[in-house]
Length: 110
Image (tube, rainbow, N blue to C red):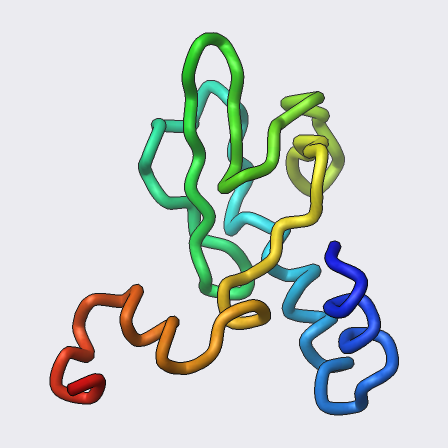
């Protein structure tokens, strides 16, 4: 994580609640094995903000994170080890950027 984001998440009372959201962004709704993934097909997270898998040349990415160990079965689901922290867009973008990326707020942005 960028140092400024770590500082905000751990020291700024307004951002501490976002730490929970950051963790929830790493939990998919349901048990999803690597064989269930479809490249480009969003996966809903417990945060209700989707992540997107990309499958190419025998490797799997979730957003910009590489899956380094897939399909670790657990009693209550499945774990995929990744090589970086997934950061939900609302922690790094301002309102105008989020609205613009959504592509449906043209009137608001005008």
